[in-house]
Image (cartoon, rainbow, N blue to C red; front, side):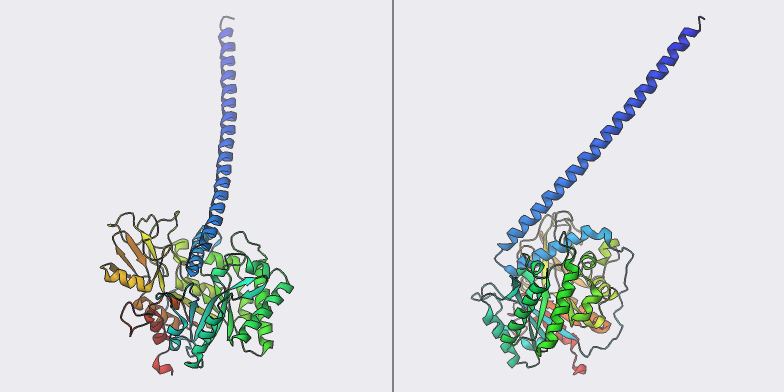
Length: 470
């Protein structure tokens, strides 16, 4: 009996410890739940804040004096956003880098975008009279707007008239009009494609404009259907628009060309386009294969604007951010090779280096550079930068250069990189090349003197249209 009392006490203590442990586990579980809930709410709040910031940025972009910079900035940011959507991309998709497929090249084209300047009274704006019509097979003039389901050219009629007049110098030149671009900062396309009546109204306005100005075709530059929160049905409606445009074009008797400017990043391609259906109706697509890398706060390192091939150090989604992958991916998804026109930029992207002594690829940056506008630098500006003593490095893997001096770092294309790209386009048998744009090529001879105008565009022309082809 003497030994029973301690046993009871021991059982009581054991029971107390078990109760304490059980209560501790419950408290820990509740705290864990609260922690996860706080994280969820914080993330949701942060997402809403980013969305509001993005919308605020869009408003700011509308007030940028140079409208073409506004739309390029918007597209660059959307391309950057596509990297966040890469969890839906097939990371195992890869393509070779063959440059010697030797397909027929007799019908290749060189499509040149000409963006209507905001003020032609200044000496640094390209006027229609200074365009060399002999280096392009197609000139696409942009950008018209989509307002109340009609094609709206504003007060720029005289620009279209003067560009069309270039056909007097080159009769087989094709001049087209593009809708969208920097005039697609609002919801013109989204509203127009919602129903058949709106699309019919729009198509009739397109036919009226092409007939009035004797234009050869129409380019759709919608950036981008069904992307980032937009109505998923826009993807289907976009195909309906193209189908109806094609039908009315064929019945118009005008022999009109129908093209579309399309995105390059895989995530946007997968979300925005029904490619086999598009291929049935378009003459060709203009692949916007640039803006692969641009300064953004969540990936603040230097990188290349429009690399032809990936570097061996790039893996996963990063290995898809190059011209070769985008063109091959469009083909793999159902767009015929002979309908793919590959884009080449005449502008570069600038970065502000954290440390001027660290100036390689993937170097830390804390903003866009001082040169150019909002991180976009024209080729003449790059030439002046090089003449000031900047160092230029040509990346042999990606086939494009970059340059730096002090804290300024610029990725750009030069004659060498454009030659590589043009040769690749020619030998792999794609439809041709597109340059964005004549306005930011060296049209006034800043780089090499007045006798060497449009050096980037001219290089493409020389490669694509060799004397032996004529």
